[in-house]
Image (cartoon, rainbow, N blue to C red; front, side, top):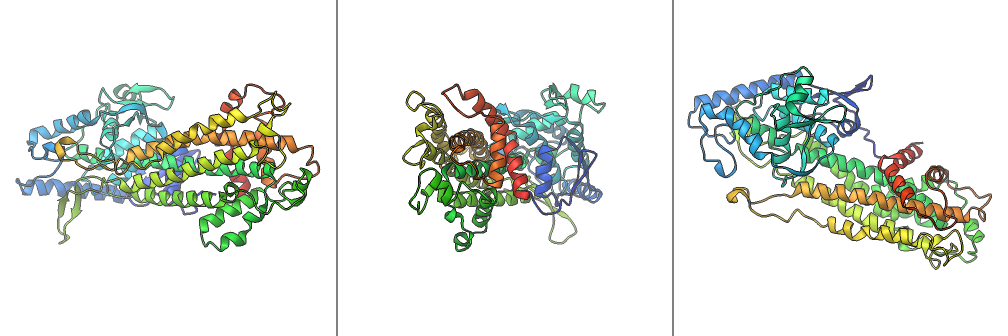
Length: 545
């Protein structure tokens, strides 16, 4: 459903190795998504990009030499509120080290190693554009770290969305072999950077040249990588939700008129029509969601229409598909952009270069994308909770026993409390879906007086996606129980082609409830299976067929 169809211009796979050639302009979404999951990577830089980096570097140094009065942020001037402090030539190399150490103040749990690895790739690609003034050797060092599996340990808290200062400073300590730097190695163990580089037979120390510390830590590479990770997770969850909803439709014997393509064609929303088509594909040939299926459970009068929660599903899935697609586009653009400060750009004569200080590190577009997806995910979470509730209420479920108890009702409570635990997630999800982009305040003596809070937005999305996995597990278990309780009465009527496959997989992990039992371990195992993508892969393959 969500796999990109565009060609991977920079991507080549062979012998289990994912190869990427960086030129600053041609990373596709397919490249980025593949880099998140690949076991081994081979990253190189395009020779043309290498030459451009070298030319730009030489031009920047020549401009500084030609004009002793030229002041350039992060090159011969200090940073932040100390921007007016001139750096003497003999201070500039020491300054590169100090920048990494002073800015590496991140706190809390480390970002997933897949995010850290992709952040290196994205930053290396941005530097390969040749607009930062950094040397090609810096990109080579970053690529070498990725290829060797030496992935910086990057704390998740610290970025305000005004550049990835704290997280990329932590990465910089690892890249330069600083004793404070930590890396995750291919065996999954964390080691000090000097020991890790030495064990690989590489130079332990890598000295940043003038202007390279700011080139490394400025920009939005970590945010870009983290949002790419979150988007892939939510795509997985949308596919998983479709599988769970298909089981719900069977258990509820829904009226399929709401999914008639003619209805959605009148709305002119392509994502909504896509979502509706996917639902119909999973429910294809269902004998349960028919007049006969409903008659078997005692419905002799027309249902006319189902509750709004059921009829809203194509619309809610459609809007999140739209926002995910937009987020993919934003991430891809950002991964191929010059996001550092300052930039070294050809002047209007075409004969020289200008140092330009601006705000391309501003990550508003990424934060907004994360907030938009998060808002859609929160609505889908509420919808998931409400769908499960319909199967538990004997006044709403059209013939199912109250609580879906397998034994005597009352003596057995069935799944009422499982649903209550799921409902407890909703206020947490809603709280984290509140927009944070307007929560700005001045820092650093007022020099940095506005912040996008984009990292907070992405962190909130990731946190909510983890909660949504739990909600999905509950909808699976409740829908599966509903199907189980109807199987005898539905004998001879098939489940939908896709629904049947999803139900079979569910039954391999969670057994039906005959009498009340301790369900939490099975549900937790199911959550982990969902998180690993087992149901998403199944649904994806069914939809591809």
